[in-house]
Amino acid sequence: MTSENDQAPAPQRPKQNPLLKLGLELGPLVLFFIANAKFGIYPATGVLMVSVVVALILSWLLTRHVPVMPLVTAVAVLVFGGLTFLFQDELFIKLKPTIVNSLFGTVLLVGLAMGKPLLPVVLDSVMRLTDAGWRILTLRWGLFFFVLAGLNEIVWRTQSTDFWVTFKVFGTMPITLVFALAQVPLILKHELKEPDGDQSGQW
Image 1 (tube, helix red, strand yellow):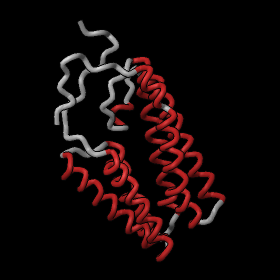
Image 2: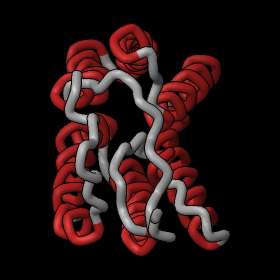
Image 3: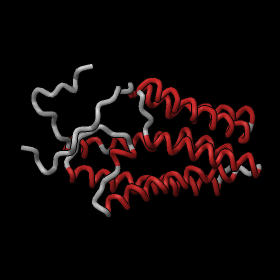
Image 4: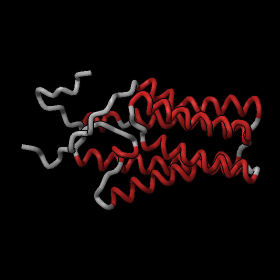
């Protein structure tokens, strides 16, 4: 009999190698950093716009699936990057992380308040956790996104453009990875084990 805490099985789809997934997400930021160091913020913004689209296309070709977070981020990059070129004002691309992270945080916390943890959708997760596990994890990630938004505001308002670009690559990403790793004990505590005879291990 199915427990009331059980989550419906996630739809099957090709699994993406974690390192490849990380590369597709981190690659555009690294190219952004390199282009900014060599050519300045405006050419770097153009490189970022192109690279996020390429990363989405590669993700689709490899898995026939586009994760929600990279998709929303790519749309935001194209919109704010376009505004950056249109008005020749780097403010727009600097505001992008603040707005996107605030959006993710709002979606998670509002969904949680309505009794609908949306973290599996936002993070494209296939984990199976208890309802309590999802609620706690959603609350933590929702608050964390607002922390990232606040950090971005502090950095771009108080530091140079080059420092802000460096922080995006060597600050935001490591902070996010450390935070994600810190959630492992919670995940292990609330993880729902696969039933006997489960075939999920097949390729």
